[in-house]
Amino acid sequence: MVLEATMICVDNSEWMRNGDYSPSRFQAQADAINLICGAKTQANPENTVGVLTMAGKGVRVLATPTSDLGRILACMHGLEMGGEMNIASAIQVAQLALKHRQNKNQQQRIIVFAGSPVKYEKKVLEMIGKKLKKNSVALDIVDFGEEDDGKPEKLEALLSAVNNNDSSHLVHVPPGPDALSDVLISTPVFTGDGEGGSGFAVAAAAATAAAIGGSSGYDFDVDPNIDPELALALRVSMEEERARQEAAAKKSADEASSRQGEEPPSKSEDVTMTESGDVSVVNEDKKPTDDKVDENDLLKQALAMSMNMSGSGNSAGDAEMSEATSADQELALALQMSMQESAGEPSSQSDMSKVLEDQSFLSSILESLPGVDPNDPSVKELLASLKNQSQEKDEEGPSKEDK
Picture 1 (cartoon, one colour):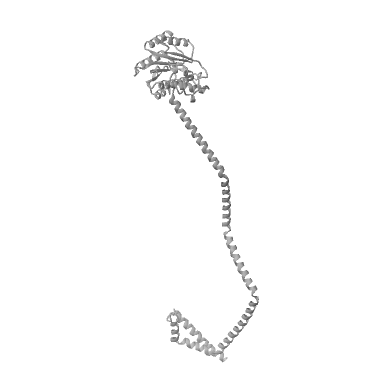
Picture 2 (cartoon, rainbow, N blue to C red):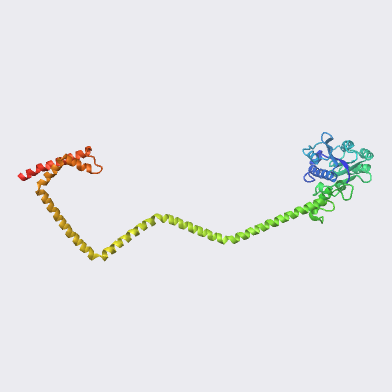
């Protein structure tokens, strides 16, 4: 694995607003830069990447060489576009930033994205290239966008001046439907000097090929010879997911079969429950009427029994009725005779008045009665009224006899 420090020069000039690259030149350039930064940091944990801008108010370093990928990606957000690209000053500032790298064992590399016209002459660019070669700095140039004013020839002159043992590269990317990052994946700018390149680069290239429609021939499009841990993790996760899906399918099938087996009893139970509910409601509604019916039945039965009894003993009933009528006649006759005797004997009334006048006799009788007090005022009033009535009758008796 190559240990190197890389500075990426970003073109943020006004030419980057054009839409000949999807979605725009600047966005296509940003996606390619993010992909290259990820490949460089993944190739070796000690690799560092820095970012600077070539247009705007001037050349500005956004991030010095660092291994923090999050910091590198964050500096790409919110960049302003304006001015013209100053490729000569940008390369010199990048060389200065690499000169002050912390790890002196790292190889130095500059990646330039040139998407706008180059205003410098070939001689100036050749001088800059020779200086880079003298300081052992490799240079990768990505030429896209404008091609007027001899831009490709100027960049070729710069590359020939800096190139040493094919360590530097120039890539021309014409406008088209393919994204800028997709084209760079298969170039030495992305894969590096070696034939195999980094595992991150190979995996990204395989994913891009699969997205386009090709196939790498490996499971999950990952070569186990390059990244065996990733291939094993993908295989294990795939097996776990397959087992989970099979368990879920089996569970759903069991639930469906159990539901099918339980449906008829449940329906019959529902019918019986509804019928029992209806019967209970009807019974509750009929409770008062049933009580009335029972009472009426009992009365009818009693009347029928009495009628049967009366029908079975008509002769005995007639005899009893005749006897009762004769007895009533005798009783009425006896009562009439007693009334005549009482009316004809005034001495009995006088005897009653004498008894009432005897206070000692009455008091002894009243004391013998349980719960009666002879001294009670109400008892005394009752005795006085009886005495007065007996006296009135005694007075009426002689007057009737005189008449």
